[in-house]
Length: 406
Image 1 (tube, one colour):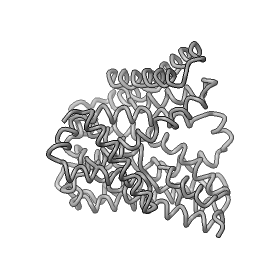
Image 2 (cartoon, rainbow, N blue to C red):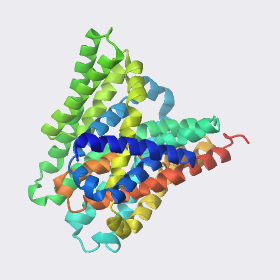
Image 3 (cartoon, rainbow, N blue to C red):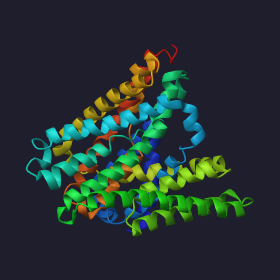
Image 4 (tube, rainbow, N blue to C red):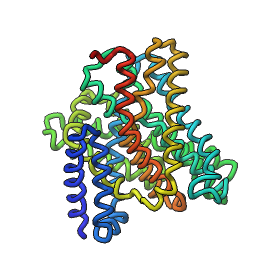
């Protein structure tokens, strides 16, 4: 089947199931994932077998745009205005989510699921590190929808949205370091004393420097094209953004950090930053999410999911504990109001978007072939739970905080 026909089917199916999901007052992302599951079940012989070998380019395009937008949230003046409280909460809830999931999976994977007979060094520890690194990001769209639906206003809702803007950044940083460490454990023959420090540092700092270079080039070229139409500016953004991602892959830098650094440089040093990021949100964002989640649903392997169900539940529980504990500690250190300490974490439970992209990226790395499918199924299964339960938790928390009026 031609790839362009496959892409058309993905987009149309995502639209249809997204509309059905909204009719049942569910997040659109749930509909997108169900669309992928439906396509997998009904057209596996025609569509799925071809798709798994052709979606890497689509995934990479989606990831480059999402991480560029995440970098675009790092406007220095906004960070300064939000204050240390939100930053402390974001840092602690991200780190504690990682630590609790890592320790929890080290405890359960040797005894439960499909990995119980595996090697500690080359499988169990790398899997625990990689899955834990996927616990930090939050999908703020579900909480934002609840906030707008009930016109919630107050310190808790504003804190939730501020923290969500930064824990994706923390998540990408944690993920980048986790990938470097896990790869060295999976391929121990390549480990040396120097590589333990130098290779992760080169991967991370090289990516940041590359992103800054491409951000500088973008700002320079855009200064010459100020009178161009939005269509021309989108062409410029996509061209340099995809080049940044591609060069990072070629140099074996972390491609997500490079595109995020590019977005951060653009938002802080381009006077037309509002036009750039609003334009991407208006014209491209929803299409990216449709493709992302429908492909994720197609990758959902029910034969693996039945053996990883305990791991899915474990991920959801460990992540929730980490989020609640970390948010409370961060709020206590910052001396945030009592309502923020008690209820802010409940709005940080929804998860989707970038975390599925990160999991798909793991499947592209040959070093993780033996267990990447298990990680992807755990994350997709957990995403469905998070997107269903998250809005209910957010509504309950905002109501108890007195920010939703009857």
